[in-house]
Image (tube, rainbow, N blue to C red):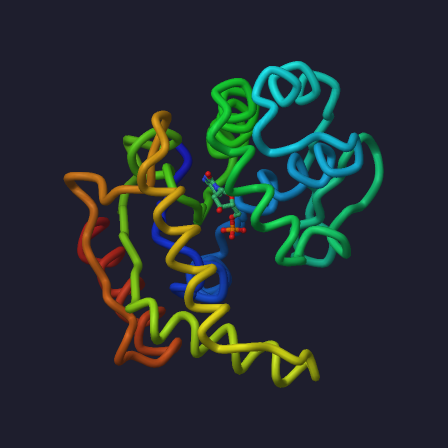
Length: 222
Ligand code: DC
């Protein structure tokens, strides 16, 4: 049977960076489920759909063929045959992903894809509903969080380093709004699974968090 680690938590908690490090160390594949929701959101944007048009979102998602490939160890997301890795990291796509991921038809489609991947491969999978819905039987479940100030500060520094002009308060507000949407949606809201271990990364380095998760995994598999 394949092995799995589920990492859930709010935006900007460091899930993807840490999940990648843990996957590399264990020789597992890192599955970024947020990228799949982002690819779906990009498809909605390309089709001129508004986040409030839930019926259109349900209908349109049926014609989105999202697949994942690994090229040189990097996850590449294909949307109807096109590599969209370079188009899904914008704030606009992130906000649309948060809005369109409330849709039950979108979730059903992507959860099936994620479960299929984990059936045949050892995975570290990150997202919002991995421990609660996608992989309820995961060997280890981690709920990774950090304060909104710390998460906004990380995002702010990332953008400044890229030379993007930005406003700290606006970034923090965006993070708080997105958390609210992700935690209060009707289907599969972001929450800590009962058997998940809480890790607060506010005062930890990336290496310390990755080390902690590897230690937790060792404990459950020994
Ligand atoms: O992790 P991220 O920022 O790339 O995710 C983008 C959005 O996708 C996020 O606001 C919520 C949604 N998402 C989800 O609903 N379920 C997941 N398993 C992963 C992401």
